[in-house]
Image 1 (cartoon, protein in one colour):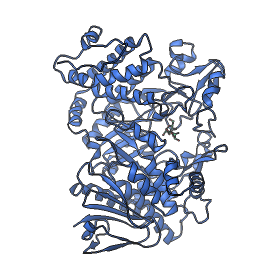
Image 2 (cartoon, rainbow, N blue to C red):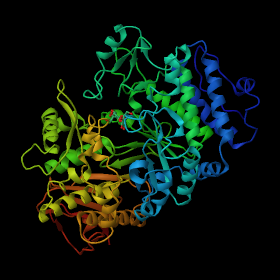
Image 3 (cartoon, rainbow, N blue to C red):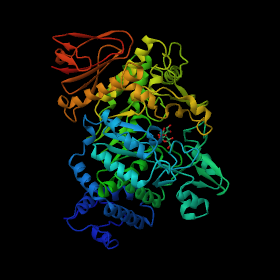
Image 4 (cartoon, rainbow, N blue to C red):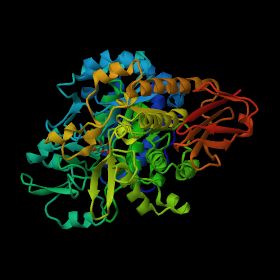
Length: 636
Ligand code: OTU
């Protein structure tokens, strides 16, 4: 029986027989796994593709091209990955396991190159890492490449880091050690040195159509009316005049990052080819960089448009046919109501949780968990077979992207509150422990984001030389990590944070980095500090040991928390204490204030043990947490 395609008006309904005629040499053999996946996922692919391009007379041609890309990738898929496909298809929720622990870092800064990364494997295993996100490692412009986010060739690894075949070998080795590799799929733009951009610059119309180009300011000016500026300081505006082309080129981010034009189906097909190529190198998770921006439409903010979702769904369906082990992780740092729209088993199965991240920092500054608790109690649940990637810090800045409505519901003025948070985290607010650096202040909107490492933002930098304040900073670092580790989803550790790495201000001396304060939290791996962290009582060592204990506690949760059991953010009855429970047997309590706090225990937790301190509660009605203490209570 052939799958019936969704009924769609006024268009040719491509039956399989119909399509087969055009691609006989590539068509999957009857009864093959590929054929059954085609039947399972082509309807979705067609539906979304048709929604995007039905108005084009050449739609059918582009659809065939797309299918050809899918089949060629399926044919090229190595045997070990075909096996992985089967394993993943049997356990699509593998990323929800309590054994999952993620780490993210730069290959060069963490390990020098891909070879060096292999040598770091024992250190990653010691931390229990099962998911490793390597920051963009593709060929890119030499001086400034936005940390690799301006890709010149998706199929070539940056020469100083290694080669594509080394990468493929590494993903296989890591997989053998239970570590899934995640890479960025930077689909909104390429660098202006990408072959497509070069050919556009050389006058090839076909490639000029890969980007957004305008002869005069008429349309750019109209678009600008509704656009945000993402990097107002280093790259103001969204369009750049190009002398060679005599055109305005759309550049949402830096001037050397050219936005791709997905209204052209050839772009989608080309980028699908790059995506499946990466999947066939053994990359298991693709981070959909800046996914909110991929579709533009005049008169709209050009973010989170329905077509952006349709594009991802086409890509997802294509992956499900050619490389089903592939998982998407959306990077949409937008309003929480928009974030959730990307998360679906048929779209992006994983997503960053920037709302949670921002509110964790908010609670740390205010010592008040109300907004965190309120927002998460209604925003943490996800559709089936999806998971959050919970994090505290990554390579980017922190933006205060909580929902205004959530703040207003609690009587908090969102604008003023963001001003306060910016002051607090740049150390301007009196008594602040944080030492962050402003990122892209916009004088018109007064919007600003924050750079800085976890340790510096948690007070370790400002505490230097003061024993008591140092202990508080350490407790804050562990408290923040404890929360993401206790929750359902993949906890993501930003490499360097495991040893409480401080801000590194040397970027100010590098002319290619000085105008981007995010480099303050992208230091080179400090080997001396890492050695120091392995024993003794330095701050680095205390954080390293503490984190190891928390990771251990997380992995042990499998015995008490079933996979898929919900994470609940219930009111603890004390503004300073966050209570997170998973199922009936586990409760995490965290005290965001520096003073002891007492809360009433839930009835089922009156006999419990804190797996971190070992403390046993026996017939207890209340529990008191020391300042900044966390308790992982397991019902006894
Ligand atoms: C992403 O982030 C990357 O994480 C950044 O490192 C890149 O610079 C950027 O894309 C361009 O590739 O602007 O400050 O609203 O905030 O996608 C970070 C979403 C960013 C953007 C986010 C973007």
